[in-house]
Image (cartoon, rainbow, N blue to C red; front, side, top):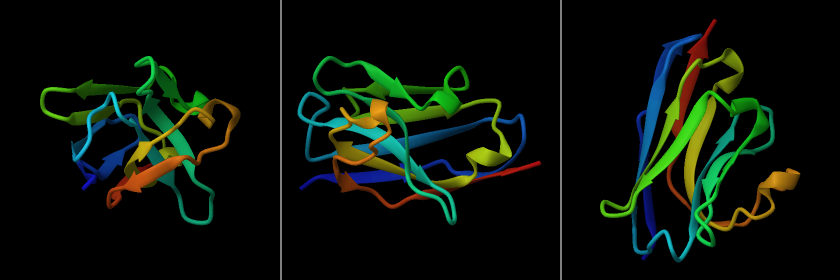
Length: 125
């Protein structure tokens, strides 16, 4: 059974940092791509970052490039999202998800089959 557990959200001032963690079980990172999706109130979902199971490449949403870094620890089946220089527009519920993210580069943020409970990130101005 695939399970995903995200943690690490919170309230931070603009310019601050947070690190999200996701504990994955029931699959390996060779089997499924794993990534972070966010959704702000009244807005559509956005694929923030994803590590592809195919070639291990990492996708980033344009608006987070240079500020967010996604990493993985295969031995622990953990992934992380280091978020620096946070902006109020980063405020959203962040979900750890697994499946496929090959279409994220063209703005189609679907393909994930498994979802964890979200963690709230709030950035105050």
